[in-house]
Image: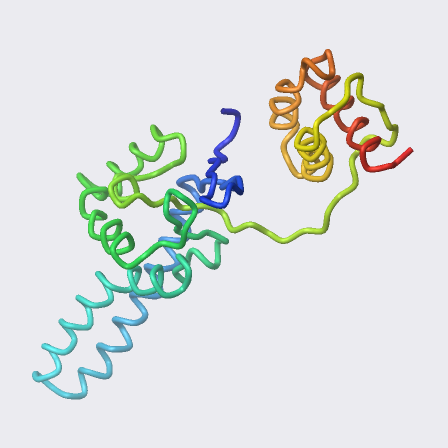
Amino acid sequence: MLDTYREVVTPEGVALHLPAAGPVPRALAWVIDFLIRMAMVFVSGIVFGLLGRGGFGFQAVMVFLVYWFYPVLFEAMWNGRTPGKRALGLRVIANNGAPVGWLAAFSRNLLRVVDMLPFGYATGLVAGLLDPWGRRLGDMVAGTLVVHDARPHEPSPAPVKHALAPSVALRPYEQAALVAFGERGPHLTEARQAELADLAEPLTGARGTAAVTRLYGIANWLLGRR
């Protein structure tokens, strides 16, 4: 594995490549949510303070709800995104790529108390650094994953202009795979392109950059760019 992409195949047979989020964007999202929560507590404190001593109880309930249910409500009702995660382009999803549900959202946020031990999210940080997809303990138990939102983009042409006829007859699904590589490859890292191209070594007779170039050439040929 050369990056933090996690491949999930849906029941319909569609392969999803989910870019897992690292600790830095997740920490920044948490800071934004923390500031929003503090603002909510501050404003409610002013409002309930007008009620005198009777307002203390309401304020205590407000603090409880904001601390425990702010992330649960947003993640379950806003497609896996709190305001902080939305600002950073992050989303919580289930391990199989499905939207996160109420139970999973509640479980992962309940276990924050464990990830925060012994201080400053130390346990969660260590777990995230050891896990290939950056999951803290709450995510592992709840079966969730924090990923970067997919950004819509226009299809890019293959970076290789020439067309190369395949040396052997290709089956329909092989042709489809090569065309998909030609269309999606430019959006991948060079290392990822080489990793995928190495799988087609029996066809290209090459590895690394040379294999990538030949695959783009074959994709152009299949697409009629000749």
